[in-house]
Image (cartoon, rainbow, N blue to C red; front, top):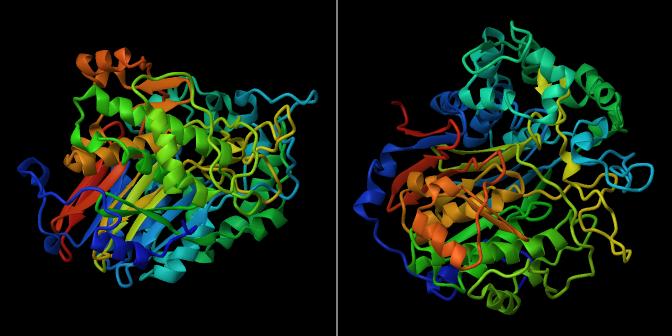
Length: 579
């Protein structure tokens, strides 16, 4: 397999039927409900917060492009969903060009400062720091990438002036907004960031505690920053007073970091080829490493060796197959994926049909011990992974009147990042996405070990699907840390294999199988499915607190079918041009 097969070649293979597994099916009446012909739905936004959806739609109504709207959506999310993403974090954007049909990836992943060392998260005795201690440290913050990445994409695909994209977020920050139930729930949780001085000051309530859902929150510092960002472009963050405050904040104890003004000035987003492979009658395009897109494509290839498409959400065998394929994928992903500028990632080997076929034989009939990583062609010896990756992320999708589509996953890593705030936004703790142990007991290096300038491995996989004719067919992505691959996987299976309306596919129960852990939404599965899984060796336990945050869009027979994860507060709205 070629590392990045050409999109044109894959489309030709699909058109000839050589790569397709399965055939297109006509939509059921249930699947087609609440949809309208695409001629009447020329642009759309799906995001995890209504205010962010509104900000994106406002830009599209003015004739803005999908990327223009993405800038506005991110600016608003940084304000109203600060536990998940923000201007102090990073992102991956997968972009479909409506004119050329090309899919490209904009990599805005954070980087380690030049002063970072492989021992960044080890104590004086060489042992890993407790995660709760590391996550609050100044050394946890990577050089933010989201703003420069958005600026790069907007220069190439924007239709409106950069300085016209921040008005809604700036006004909302200045006038205030009502804290949503979801944000209120996180403010009432047990997260270590809630003890951080900046968190307690920003969310201070009249009773001496933190604000709650329904309280009003204003952020004049963020409003002022957005005014400068609009006027100055990304230099408002990467140089000058904001950059100086970021450096000072990350150098402060405990466990101060090494970030410098030079690190911020030197940050460069990257434009990468998308990694695309067939699944059923679609091409699925995802970001390449350091994203985990290669792992997701391997998961789909493993599922193609099963009969999951002939089953459905009420069949315990379907969920068993999904769990076992997930475990095999995670074992390989964890071992081999890292920043390709620093380690050799065996992408071709991980997606080699013969290798995947052998791995698929391990699915079996009952769940056994945790599967070990295989040895794909071209793989070098690597240490077992020790990365911890909590959830604290958001995903959104934007389509414009010209057929351009953005699928973007954005994050500050865990809840409220490090809990350290600069100019009204939180700084990421993305460097804790690295493996804390740089080598194993045998001296083998970890693919995801810390290194200066390195991008930590990411589970973010904003995907775009393309049909046989090269037209946009769908987009998916999620929040949820290392569970993102499982969250997006079950949504795609629901929408594509089980032909569910997107909203129903996104509401399917979550099941995350990784190593010896089987996490799932026990209350959402039927007793029959739970019993069937138990009989197959899978006993579900409640999963991680962030839960999923999947947004999804599909074009079915020319009709728009969009949805948002009901576990969050999002919306998926399409509008007619000029309406």
